[in-house]
Length: 449
Image (cartoon, rainbow, N blue to C red; front, side, top):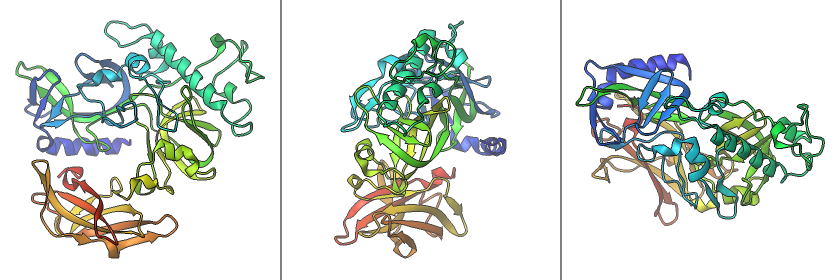
């Protein structure tokens, strides 16, 4: 993220922070309020330590406290995810589940060995620490959350998963010397000449890796005793606080894919990179298709995504040739199990009080549905409209090859930051007129109004 973005964000926070947050409640029930005069902070840097007991992240010299709630709303950490044994998302990590960030818990307690339906295992454990390799291998000093035994376990897991996945592909899909490229070396540091007879584990070289990145902007809060806390209260990339293992990007044509088994993750090959579907129980694994619609692992691995398909993967790399995919975008595929889908593209929201609301998104399937929107508000957990439905049919640009449609709306009347802070997208069956999908977006909150 560029410095200019943070400078602008910090300036906006200084000017409008009070309107975003006034009261936070810590994990222990203590209520904290904004310090007067207001003090702010902004960080994007490597994670140095985790204080599980106090729900704090240490980065770039700041001790950032993750509250239980902020202005009555549950506080969640972006780029994290908890899934059950059917890979159903239980949401992001919170103050109540903060201990899931621990390398030790991720490597042992929180594993999910079950398979994802007809696909491979859900979470066989992390292959990379939240700390840099050198720090993770060190013995804990003072209160630092370090455990070289756990780090060794994660490094072994990396080799275990990568070897198993590599063995599933026919010769020629990946380079013949692939195992040497990922760190499996001989006593002299060379590559093994026979992939079925590998040198002893003690000679293998785990690639040096950086740790997680913490991203947050917020304010200083104080408790009744005068203790101060740095609490994120300004949204960056859609969340108030993030813990990212990495934002590595891999884009290209799918060369091949392989369904996993009980000890092998599902994987795909792009270029000369083996991309395994994420196995870290702290991080997400989302597959998206046309219109941002979800695609199940089973559908992805069933052959629905053929070799040659253009795909984009975001995840954390270990070395140069192994990625653990956290988000896989297959923009030309739709999972029919979804029925119908509509979504708005992030960061396309714009509002001009004198003209109206602008946004851009997609709907699928286009041939059998009709799309409209309606403004309103959620009151007492019930969505309440403030106007009539507005048809978007005339503005849809249909792609017959994917049976999807793009809408690009400019200056639409009806939005009001006071009385109509949300917009509901309504997808109806074109034959029966029945609602088959609806999505509500809090446009005013997304724009910080």
